[in-house]
Image (cartoon, rainbow, N blue to C red; front, side, top):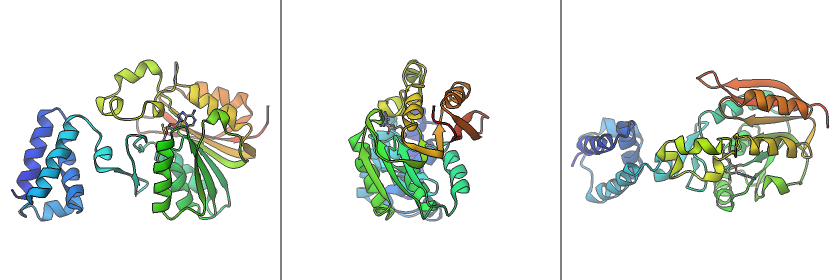
Length: 282
Ligand SMILES: C[S@@+](CC[C@H](N)C(=O)[O-])C[C@H]1O[C@@H](n2cnc3c(N)ncnc32)[C@H](O)[C@@H]1O
């Protein structure tokens, strides 16, 4: 079968299973298996696809029918224009997390900073910051040993082993070092809302990367309280939050001696990231 028909058939199959992004998914999966860019499929659409590729493609399409996220099927996700290895132990990096990156790199350009990333997952936040801030160093911690293993592979792939460390730690027990910058994208979905997430998320992404407890704020609070002992005076805490959490989180930050420097909105005008400076130790 030629490329054009292979994609068309797979796209129809995905559409019949109510997958809205059926055409794009069909293209991404075939380009990944063939090891070519998506544009190549368009410019070479009459090329014959080998039986070996078709077999691999069919099993990838089967996985997608079961709602497995594309990122897990192909084993990578683009974040800040770079491909990060991801798997079922790591959250799939989200575009809203790039809001946090954008602000921080403008603020710290060329400065020598020591960074802590709490709940590092694939390491996408810390690795991206270290690639952009060439004098910075950092440590990423996560409660999941499998996530840390993945973050270490990503760090090696980006040639960052001399400036980064990844360690398995529960934030409750972490007491090492003092940091100029603490970043975190903690789990922040209220437990009762988890069941309303799409099947792609609930059935595949790690629960401990999503569930923020009763009101979604359990981990956010832990990050803020624990940062008291880890941040330098005038250090910066940059934290991603969920929908409608801004007011509560902002009040907690104030009560802990932080002054808000900026807040970042997503395209739906929800505050998704708060960046604040530690002024007082309370
Ligand atoms: C929302 S994910 C963020 C992953 C990654 N930083 C990103 O932005 O894609 C939250 C991460 O926090 C980790 N986590 C959950 N509870 C934790 C705890 N008590 N201590 C440290 N890490 C924790 C999870 O394993 C998960 O990797």
